[in-house]
Image (tube, rainbow, N blue to C red; front, top):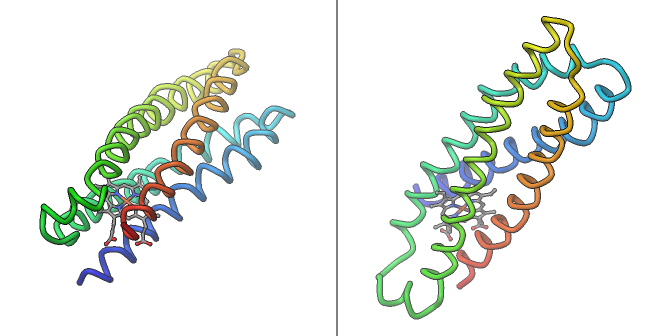
Length: 149
Ligand code: HEM
């Protein structure tokens, strides 16, 4: 069960980060060169996959916490501190991902439908993706550090 939970945790991370990476580095540059409608649709359609993956990551993450062992050992090894830092960054990440998917992507789809200028929405999504990926990289490091502490 413990191995299955870590497996699901890592799979969820791969799916979420892979999706953001592909959108940020492949689809978004194409949208900036003209095909905004296709990107707006892809970003909207990507939401259920991304949020299901994030939910799996968070749920299995909490389960993983219960499998770390006795509390005094978790405190002494430094895992508790790493976990606190990781949890704080996950909160920031989830807030930014929500702003991106339900704020900016919704705004972009509205602009595309009404024929408005999508430049600022695309710019905001690009920045939110960069920050989310950076946070993701740090959080992955913290996850690996926790499991090896
Ligand atoms: C509330 C959210 C989360 C909690 C409570 C949590 C908790 C944990 C715990 C306790 C472990 C250690 C598992 C073990 O050694 O048995 C772990 C591992 C890991 N976590 Fe998370 N996590 C969360 C979210 C995330 C996120 C968002 C990412 C990446 C973006 C992530 C990436 C990883 C990775 C890569 C590992 C290493 C797996 C391994 O090799 O053992 N976690 N997490």
